[in-house]
Image (cartoon, rainbow, N blue to C red):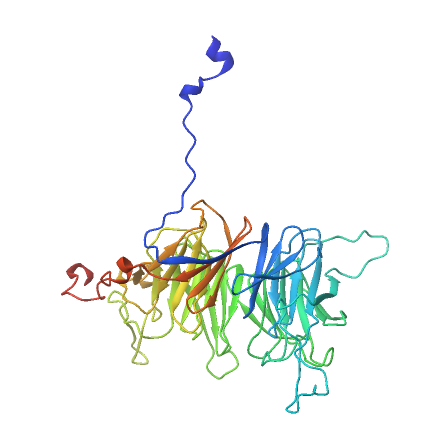
Length: 474
């Protein structure tokens, strides 16, 4: 009777599940430096420093040596949703939940000294933002429709932003684009005047600069719009949607390549590719990694040969053409045209670790991929190394097969405390140093320094090599 009234005894209750712990298998990443900045909201990277936005509305600048070079005053009540450097690195654009976009600009300039040792006439270019404490808030713009008489104005959080410049990216930013819900504003810098506005049919899911011809891309629903921006301010042609790309899946992220290729990640993990759209031979591809990708983030390698995506595993698409086609992926024949087609000529490479990868970043000038998972473990993968063959599936349905190749991490490391810490940023500071920012407020730089045991370990077997691995051959 007592148990009926009170409930089951505490002894009968199952013990709570243990929290997941970071698992480091390889090691080889030494802590180069560690900086504490406060609870991190988001991070933007330039060639000289990291801009770390904190939840209290400030921005902390940490240089590549781990020193805090500057700290802005509170410019908002909370941290931004997105933040990006201008290509010139003299300005920083951020967007906030209060529906505003704000721009920080450097006010320090280089010393222009001539051969005679005297100052050169004219205005010297600005220093990179964050290298000194001399900067100012130059633009504060509300991304909202014009007010309507008799109606209360609604505040919609600003979620995405992009700093725009000319096609070469060598001059100071001339404008920025920012989205709030279905609305996108393009604003002039430093005047703060609205250049143009677009209201799309669905909420904006991604927004990024067009690195090839200037302007920007906007992803909403199942469509991507390419918008033109002129360098001379509002003029004829500014704000025109020059091209639209349509998918059959809801889009989530964007990653344009320098040569004009456009890639988008979808909510179901597919990768949509549009290439050579302004030529006589345009093409479209729809790719699946088959390892539970989520399409949250995409990243191209510096040479454009590899495309990585986040998800349950570190997945990568190899566009280099250096990997052989999998034996299961048999060619298809067109009897009418007497032509042979490959069913899928783009190999997939899948990370062997069953982890939830949240961020991906490529090393400069190489094919080393860095990933960080949900518990804060950083892993390095060599995409030009030796791979393990995969690809189980039915040969008559190659589009449903698993990735052709599997990859093992070369080096890994967790948060210096060994505890679970949720990451929010991953980026390379140099060819041998990768930085990760944790939401707890730590920014940690890890240097590639493999211990002797890892450096001397034998490489994995060659693919399709009977002498080293008989089971690795079909």
